[in-house]
Each structure stands twice: as structure tokens, then as C-alpha cells.
Amino acid sequence: MTRQLFGTDGMRGRANEGAMSAEVALQLGRAVGYLLYQRGLPRGRARPQVVIGKDTRVSGYLIENALVAGLCSAGVDVFLAGPLPTPGVAMLTQSRRADAGLMISASHNPFEDNGVKIFARDGYKLPDEEELMIERLMVGESCDQMTLHSSTDHTGHILPHHWHGSVDLNRHRPIGHEIGRAARISDAIGRYNVMAKQALPKSISLSGLKVVIDCANGAAYRVAPQVLEELGAEVIPMAVDPNGININHLCGATHTDALVERVGAEGADLGIALDGDADRCILVDEHQNILDGDQILAVLGRSMSTAGTLKGGSVVTTVMSNLGLEVSLKRSKVNVERVQVGDRYVVAKMRALNANLGGEQSGHTILRDIATTGDGLVTALSMLGVIVTENRSLSELGAEMSHFPQALKSFEVSGKPPLSSLPKTRACIENAEAFLADRGRVLVRYSGTQKMARVMVEGEDLSKVNELVEQISGLMAKEIQDR
Image 1 (cartoon, helix red, strand yellow):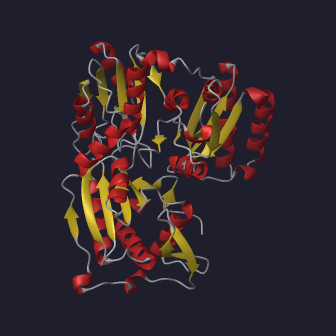
Image 2 (cartoon, helix red, strand yellow):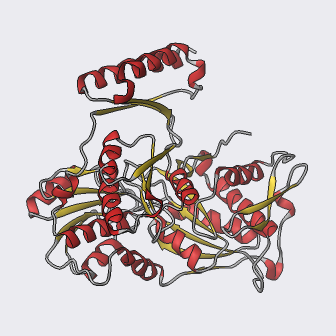
Image 3 (tube, rainbow, N blue to C red):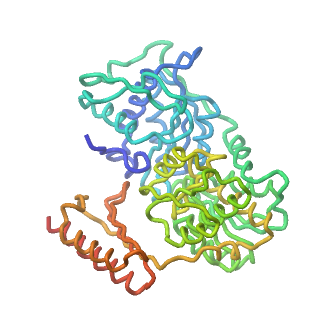
């Protein structure tokens, strides 16, 4: 079975239809609850425990209540954190010793969409095989080759054993005192506040820095400005008035125009842009230049290497990161390890290498000594720490990395056929790669969350890079349409 409900970052879709309907969310809760019981409970615990957080989308209430109903009907106790950044949910799952955590968010997508990200008890996102297991349970597929949560290893993930035949979730219906309960976590924001501040040494104050922060009318609208103010910065907040439908609308990490303008108007030292669930960070320097995730990795990688705190001598990133990142970090004798797109794959590689810094060009930066997933606020605080410690401006730091010219084109597709079945597109890609040789790259991939294809070309000549992107994307769109 191929995955139909889960993409590269959990489940995501249009709220109140398809994968994001109340019916599917309820079934998701039941499937997660079933697996938690099969895995077994910690000693002394009567029922599994799950933490749920969300961003500020109006549909969050719909998904949250359906998940709670499904989990409670499966005999799970639920703890509701309310609006909280995704890394806060991961932290609470781990610190409360809960059995799983669910974050209701569609990240940077518009408010009409929503999604669910699932964390294991160790605070890390579930691997693909465990999401597929949940999906099979939800659709009632035969499970001849499927594995159950019978016990766990030291990471909190499964140690599998096999079962045969299909599983009917309706047979798992606790009654009476075995039905799960739901309660609110009153101090969720405060606990995340304390965790985020670990990114800045206690000896460092942000006093004297003027910071503009765009919270995307999302999950960090309250906690992010609060943390910066408590650490001494003069804070100018933007997009901190969520109304359920304005999340990510012309604001946040994917729409930085308003932040760029505000940094200039205020004469600020820098600007910080978070996305809807605050797991990514994009920065704007004092000259109104944007720093992407690659530049952030370049600065932090060099700084941590110099301080002797970079573990494994490597920074993990994805195939989308600019070649300029490798050139920049090579000067500090830091290796760059690449994986497929998705912060979950970055984290998996980091764990395998025992690395503590990784991320994506899009602004997902993982500082694994502090957080188990991308954390926009922790990223911003870490960069502020470098600014203060080295007494340098953000523009100076950003200049440490020069971008190779890169062009990216995204376009809608009716299907996602493998590239091997598109001979004309494949030949065009091979010709482009031969032309670029070792001074450029071509990357063609489908979005994991949308019906989109993405073509990226990187090289020394911008005009040629743009030409190749248009050639490949045009041919690919036509070949898919003609199938």
C-alpha cells in the first residue's frame, strides 16, 4: 500500500473535506489510540496519554474535537495545549512522558487547509513506516505484512512483531471507566517559553537590540514577542492578532514584504519571520536583505564549529540547499550532508550521525541540543546570540555565504508519475546536468503535500539557469498532461 493520507509532513489537506474531514480525524484518533494500547503502557499508567496542540486556524476546533473524540473512544487520556508552536507540542510530549503528541496545523499553507503532525513519546516525528501503519488501520486494509507497537526501543519507537489479517477498530471500544478523559494544560505557553530561552546563554542580554517579529497570525503570536521582551530586546510585533482566517495571509515566513518594509521604517537591527506553526524562521537584516535557511545554517555552523559545540563536524540539509552553503562551511572544515526534502528526513540523518545542527533552505532549522524538530523561535534566538557574542550585524553575518544563482519553478500537475515514465523530461534533465557538470545541479521533484511539481536548477550563469528551468518544467508539464 502506498501512502494516501500522509505526506512528507503528516496529514494535510483542505479542512472539512477528504483527509481533513471530521470523520477521518476521528478515525485517526481511534487508530493512534489502538496502536498505543498494542504497544503497551508504562508501569502504573491505566490509559495512554496524548498531547494535542494547534495553530490559530478556525478549523482547528473541528479537527481538535474530532481527534479528542476518537482518542477518548479508544481509551486514551488527552491533554490540550491550545495554540502552541509545533516544537512546543513535541517538547510537552517528551517532558510530560506522554505516549504521543499531535499538532493540528497546515504550517505555511492558507487558512482553508489544515493538517496533523504526529510525534512519538521521545518528541520526534513518526517515521514513514509508522505513519503507513496508522493509515492501514484507518482504512481497514489487510495487514499481512504490517507490524504492531508491541514494545519500544530507547527512542520510543516500535520494536515490531507481525500480525495477520485485517484489524477492525470497532472491536476496540472501551466502556465505563476505561473511556478516556480530556483536560487542558494551563501552563503550556510558559513551559515552552522556558525551553526556547535555552537557545540563549544566561550571560547574554538582548538589551539595545530593536527587533521586528512577524508571527504570521499563527501559533507563536503570544509567546514569541513575550520571550524576546523578557530577554531584553525592544520588540515590534507584527501579525499577532489571529482571527482564525488571517494566518499566513500576506505575512510570515513565506510573505516577507511587509516585514522587510517595517524593518526599514523602524530602523530595526533585524526582522524575524515565523510561519503559521512557528517551526521555521526567515530573517531580515538591518539593510532589508532577506536571510534564508541556508544562510542561517552557514552562520550557525561556522559559529558552532569555532566554539567546539558542533557535533560530528557536519551540518545536515536537503537536496534543495544552495551550493553556496557547502562552499561557505567548507572554509570552516564543516561537512554538508544532504537528504531528501522534509525536515523529518533531516532529523533522521542527524540522529544517525549524532549531529546537532541541520535544516532546510525554507527556514526549518533544527538545533537538536534544544529541540527535536524545527523551531523558528529557537533559531532566531541562536542567531541573536551570535550577533551579541561576536558584536556583528546580521548583514555582516549573512555575507559569510554567497548564493549560487538558483531558479525554482512550481506548477500544478494532474498526477505524479515517476520521472522514469517521462522519457522526454528525463532526457532534458540529463542534458542539463551534462551542461552544468560539477558547477551546478538539477533537482526535479513532486510536492509531498500538494499536487505540484517543482523544478530547481542551480549554476553560475543566471540566464542559463532560468532557461533550463523553463525548458524542463514546460516539457514536464506537457508530458504529464498528454499521458
